[in-house]
Image 1 (cartoon, rainbow, N blue to C red):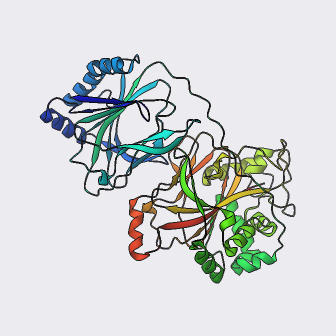
Image 2: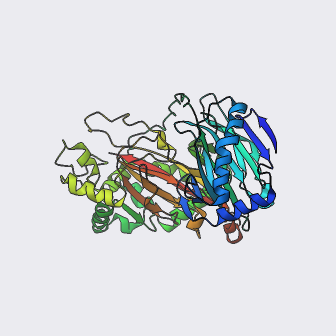
Image 3: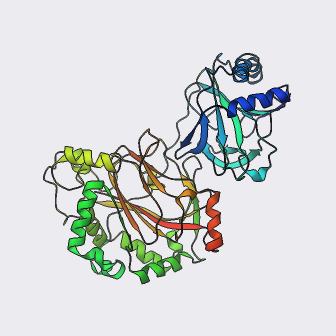
Length: 488
C-alpha cells in the first residue's frame, strides 16, 4: 500500500491498495452489502447506514476490525504522533443517487482520527460523492472547498479531527453507482475546543406605520373577512400552524414574480457552510414592487392581521392575555387565553412544542431592542428575501437561539416543485431527527408556524433532481421565499 500524508487544509492521508488482497476486499464488500441498512435522513445527511460493526461476527468484517484496531492503529499513532485508544467506532454507509453528507467538522469528545475505506466501482468526479475538504478562517469557520478526493476502490482516507476539519461527502450524481464505504473514528486525549465568536444578528425592528389600506392593496379579500379570520385563528390555536393558499391577489402575485426575475437584484451568498448555504437579496437593489412587499410584511396593519390569524399579541390592539405572570404559559398559549398548560400541550403536539431561529436569522440573541426581562415587550420582526437553488440548504446548529416566535414563509416561483428535490422547511424537536412538521414550497401560499423554545428548523438540501424542472420551466433554477419571524 502507498501512503501520502498532506498538511493542508488540515492533516490528512490517502492510502491506495489498503487491503493487500483484491479478492479479500471483494469478499468484504459482499459481506457488507449483506448487512441490514437503515435510511438516515436529517438536516445534515441523507444516506443508508449499517449498525455499529463493533460486535459483528462476519469473518471479513471481524478481521478488518482487528486489523484497524491493531496494526493500523499503531501505524497511525506513529505517523500522527497521537496516542490512540485500542477501540474504534466503525460502521458502513451506502450513498445512492442524491445522498449527501453536508459540511461538518466531526468534532466530538475524544475523536482524534477519522477514516473512510472506499469499496466502490470505478469512479469519476462527475459521479459526485467526492470527499471535499474546506479551508477555515481565523474564527474556525469553513470558507471554501480547496480539495476534493474522488472515491477509489480499496483506498483509505484518514484525517485528524480538529476545530477546522470541515468536510463534506458531496451529493451523489450517478443514478447507477453505489458509494459503499466503511468509516469511523479512533479516540485519544480530547482537544480543547476554541470559543467560536457569535455571529452578528440580523436586526429586529418594530412595525412600520401603515394602516389597513395596505392590506386591501395586497391580500386576497377572503382573508380580510372577520369570520374567515376567526376560523383561521381557531385552526391555528389547534395546530400551531396554518397554510393560507392564494394569499395575495392574483395580479399582485404576478407582479411579484416578474419583479423577482429582475437582473438588477444583487444576491449575496449566505454562509458559513456548516450552518447554511443560500442567497439573500440586498434590499437596496430591489425593484419597487419588492420593496413595497417588504414594507407590507413589516407594516402595522399586517402585525394586527397576524394577531387576528394567530391569537398572538403582535399589536397593542390585539386582545390581551389575562395571565400576564405566567410568561412561558402566555407565550405557549396561542389562543391568547389564560390556559397555559392545556394550550402548551396542544402546541407541543402540533408544531413540535419548541423553538428555534429563522434560517439566516437563526443567530439572533434571546432578548433585544424592545424586549425586557419580564416578558413585556414591543412586538418585533426580522426577515429577508431568499433565493433557493440546487445545493442550497440550512442546518440546525448549536448557536441557534431558542425562543417563542411566529414564522412566516411566503413562496414564489415554485410551480411544479417536487418535495423529493428538497427545499422544504422541516421542524424538529431539539436533539431529535423525527419531523414534527414539514412546510413545502407552494405557489402564492403563506405559511404561519408557531414555535416554542424546543423546536428547531432547517431547509432541506436541494438535490440534483431539482434540475429536472428546467425541462418544463427553462428559466426556473429554483424558487424564492420571503422568510420573516415575528416576536410578541
